[in-house]
Length: 79
Image (cartoon, rainbow, N blue to C red; front, side):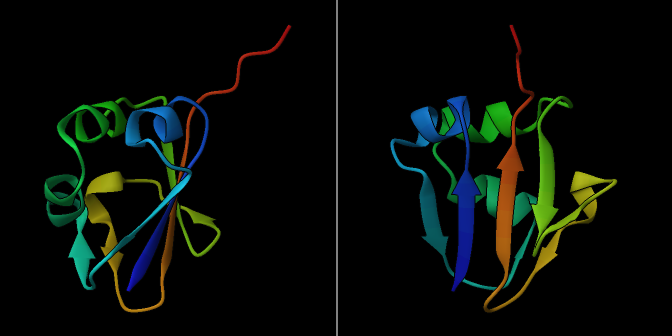
């Protein structure tokens, strides 16, 4: 299984702070496994993606296997 960690607005769209999906997953497979609103939101270039703690330079290059953790990091607004 792959754990998908969602922060901020992305967790709100998913209705949970984390999801568990079947492995393996590439970018297209990940998007297909997510609710439509969340799949659209993660395409926003301001949302960063990390796999096992390492930020990906190119989301489309995502390749996740059994036991991996994918984290979506939305932009942070400050005050």
